[in-house]
Length: 361
Image (cartoon, rainbow, N blue to C red; front, side, top):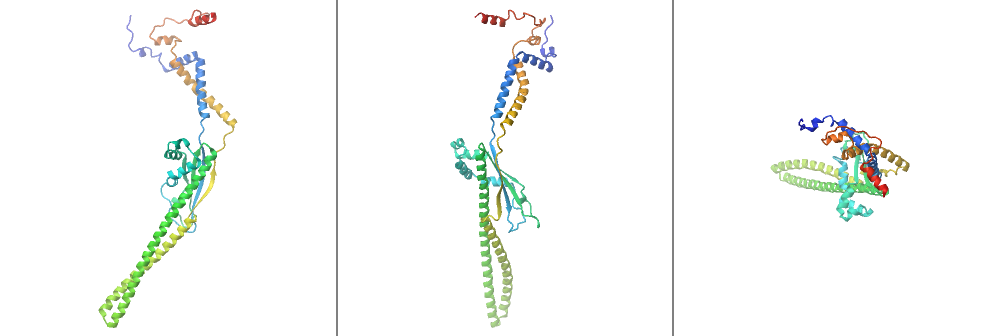
């Protein structure tokens, strides 16, 4: 008697080809066809139920158009860097968002864990996007005024509440940016006023010094003191040049002060950068129930056709019963022959005995 080969896989390489494995799993799944169909139906029902009950939050969008003023022309770029991130960080602070959360009683579960948790939760559903930012470009002489579009988005399960909160967020962006620009222009106006006062004081001191030197020169000439008169003339010439420089500095400081005051007045009245809500996009209306039913039916068919072979493979792989000759060979037992089914082949089987016992009761 020959020794059995140690490598059983090599001895039965043909038995373990992937095509034969798939055919074997198919036969084993067909042997348990009701279980396979029921499993595929249950998995399909679970997938369709999950998709049908998955309601994404409704998103509302408010579009703001920001336009530069036409009175004061500025040719250099007005913004640098990421404008969306800047507006988000400056407007949607924790304090501002907390006020909106309290106003509309948002996220009660998150608020129970703390105000900071509710604020962080709301930030997940708030977004700012910037479109057509022409403020990044320098303006040529004949170019029109520049503008930028800012979209404020908010998501909430309630469509009406989503639109209302989105409006408040847009107004918050406008108010925050207007206050910031007004404060900055006010600070610039104050600095320009301080610079004008200093330049005026310096000019006034030089003018007083010049008047003193001119009186001293007249006195020296009366005394016929030529040396002192010559020195005073040099000093007067120097003071005259400094007065010209200081006069030019005062003129420039006065012009800067005038422009700063005008910018401050325009920003206070909302004329520097004009913020205007140009579009409100509420969430889309709910779909037609008939369309939803058709979509669910198509999804059910696709899911069933997708899960059916997977369930067949899974059930066939975990079925521990013996169905054919290959199942016997996998146990390492020699197969002498195979008797096909015949009339009465189930007589005396365990199942037939159980059925007979149940019938006798």
